[in-house]
Amino acid sequence: MSGAARAREWVNRRERGSSWVIKFCVWIALRLGRRAARFFLYPVCLYFFLSSPAASKASRGYLARVLGRAPRRGDVFRHFLTFASCVLDRVFLLNEQGGWFEIRVHGEEIVRAIEQEGRGCMLFGAHFGSFEVARAVGRRRQDRPISLLMYEENARKIRAALAAINPRLAAEVIGLGRLDSLITVADRLQRGHFIGVLADRNVDGRDLVRYPFLGQEAAFPQGPFRVAMLLQRPVVMMVGVYRGGRTYDVYFETLAEALTARPADPQAWLDGIMRRYVARLEEYCRDAPFNWFNFYDFWS
Amino acid sequence: MNMGAATQTFDEAELASLIVETLNLDVVSGQIDPEAPLYGEGLGLDSIDMLEIALVVSQRFGVKLRADDENNMQIFQSLRSLSKFIQDRRGS
Image (cartoon, rainbow over all chains, first blue to last red; front, side, top):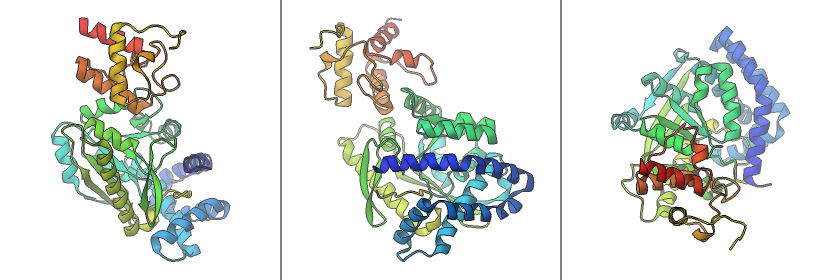
């Protein structure tokens, strides 16, 4: 099975498994509040720990690379628990209950400068930590939402889930399934919107390029970076790291300034920017290892 | 040459060669069926390719393409529909 097929399988599996978990968590969470809801994460994680050997195996494979030692059972459980914590916290963030959290923002001046220019940019994230906490920062600061660009299959599911949590947010998801999906992106950027994209995972298997990541080559999609190049917008990385308890760190950093013309050698430009993205992602993994949320064999 | 395909008009031929050049496609521009779908099956273009076409069209012909326009699906349907859209806009 190809890496892309594996990724797709993981997406399907996770969506299937988590629909009742999400509904259950939303219900419990909003009624009991975050502190009480967190108690339920332990049995939920234990359930997944026991029932998803594939996810445990993937977790072990990743943790061995990032920790540089054989992971213990406790490490894998902690990995699951970090993931579940971030999923739960999305419920509060999406319902504008950001008051539960201490969110420390780093590099906000980067976004402010782009805002003042009047045009938006794409914010490059990963399935790492909480993208939602980073989006919440954007929502808190301005009326302009941070839309999310994703594969159509996922977009449909996420829209449905978002509609259940907070219907106003469903419109913020742009699916890649239409011929004019990226024309929509271009237009929103022009009007000053920001558009988040998780650039670590590729589902359709197109435009993959391999880069060394945590000691071995892994495939990353070139598409999102090509879009930033074509639209001549800055490439900004956005990562929300869960530090445990009620604390998140949100980081913005510029990977490339806006181009003023098409680069003489587009492939070289793309290669440079992707190397930087992958290298930074690796550093974030080393800094906060349990925030990595790709529970399938990422290196296959 | 595919005899089943409709013939390109002069404007369509010009647009076809612009598209082939922009996207660096591995086809002869004169052989693009003006009525075949550009996106997906047909010419096999993806949404990034469509974005490139939209950008080059607005640059070359000064025709601005809008997002969330329900007509986009129709405009970008084929070489013929896109060419017609450009000519209409330029004429007005």
